[in-house]
Length: 373
Image (cartoon, rainbow, N blue to C red; front, side, top):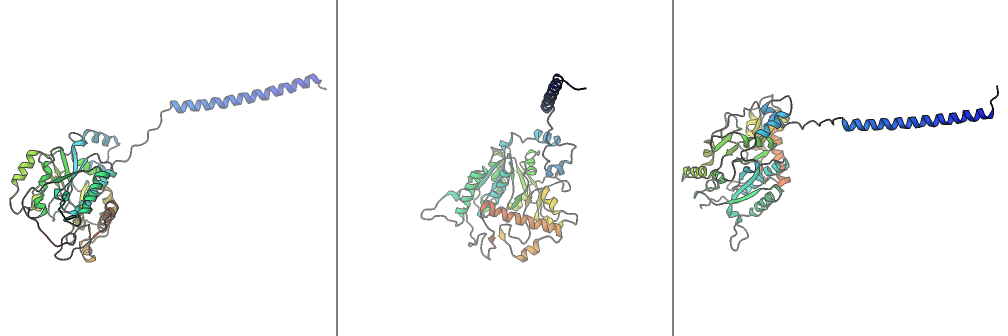
C-alpha cells in the first residue's frame, strides 16, 4: 500500500517529536541525578580525619589506649599549675662554652612549639665593658651574639645575674640554687649541660608532675654510675631560695656534691619510657637494644662519658674508641647522638667543634685562671 504525502509528513513529524522528547527527557534525567548527588554530598556527614599519632614517649609511658582521646583528656586535665605562662625551661650558663648548648635546646623547643617559657641566666659581667678594652674574654663577643639570637629567634628571656658567693670557681660564684630565685614561675626545668633534646613532649609532661620538695631530680645513669640528676625540677620561691642559699657552705662548695643530694624521681621506670637517657649508660645495654627505637622514644640525652671532654670538642680517636659502647646497636645510637649534636651546633650557632685543649689550658685554649670575687 502506498503512503500518501500527508501520512509521510505525519510520520516524519512524529519521529522528530519523539527524538527531541527523548533528548529532553535524558537531559532532565542527567540534571536530576547531578542535583541528587550534590544534595547527598551536602547532607551526608563528612568523614573525620584521624587524629595525629600520639607521641611515642607518652605512648610508652602510659601504654596504648584504644583511642587517641585518652591523650587529649590527659593533656587537658594535666595543665601546669597556673598555665604554661607560669612554667619555664631555664639554663644557667657560666662558661662561654655552654651558651651554644642552651641555644640548641631552645631552638628545638621553638621548632616543636613547646608552650613553656624560656630563660637564660648568665653572668652580668658579660654585659660590662672595661675602659680601654674591647672585651676581657676573647669569646665574649660570640656569647653575646648567641644570647641575642636566643632572645630574637627563640623568645628567650635573658637575665643577667650577680655573683652569689665569694668563692673560687664559676660554679661556686653562681651556684645552681640561684634558679630558685625565679619566683615568678611555679615550676622550672633545668637541663645540665651538655645534652641533646629530641622530643619536647616528654619533658613538657614534667611540668605537671606532683612535687613535695623544692628540688627534684631525674637520673639517667646506670646503677654503677653516680646518681647525679640529668634533669632537675624546681619549685622556685623567695623563701626556698633564701633557705638554700644560707645552707650552702662558705668554703669548698661542690656542685656535684650538691646535685647528688637532690632527691630523685622514681616514677619513670626505664622499661616503660626513656624520657631521659645518658650516653654513658649505653655501654650497659644488651643485644635487645634498638638504636632506632631509642631515638624515637627518648626526649633528652645527657651527653657525658668518661674520658671525653664533651660533645663540643673534637675528641681524639683514642678517646672515642675508649668511651663508645662495644655492642653494635648501642654504639650506633651513641655515634648518632654525638653527630646530631655536632650538626646542630653548626646549624644553630654557626660553630664547629672546639679543638681539644692542651695541658694547662682551659676550655678555649687560654691559660687557666681562677677569679676570686
